[in-house]
Image (cartoon, rainbow, N blue to C red; front, side, top):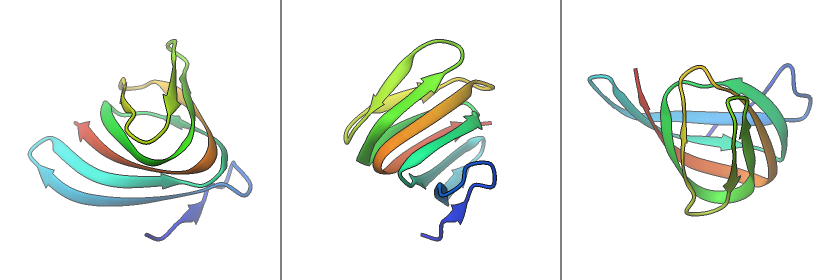
Length: 95
C-alpha cells in the first residue's frame, strides 16, 4: 500500500485502499505510521489488524488500539491518533 506524508504532521504518513463499495457502504484498509495526527471522521466501524496506539475523540472517550480492537467513530468527530507501533485497520463507512 502506498503511503503519503500528512502535510500538517511532519514525519507521519498514512495509506488507504478502498476494497469494495455496495450502496452507501464502503470497506477498506487504512495504515498509519508511528506518530500523531488529527482527523475529522465519517461514520465508521473498524477492526485493528496490527499495531498499537490510541485514538481520542473530542466528543469524549479514548479507544486503546491493539490487534482485535473493534471501534466506532461518529460522523464529524475530531480525533487525535497517537500511534506507537505502525497501525493497520479494516474500516467500514456508511455515507
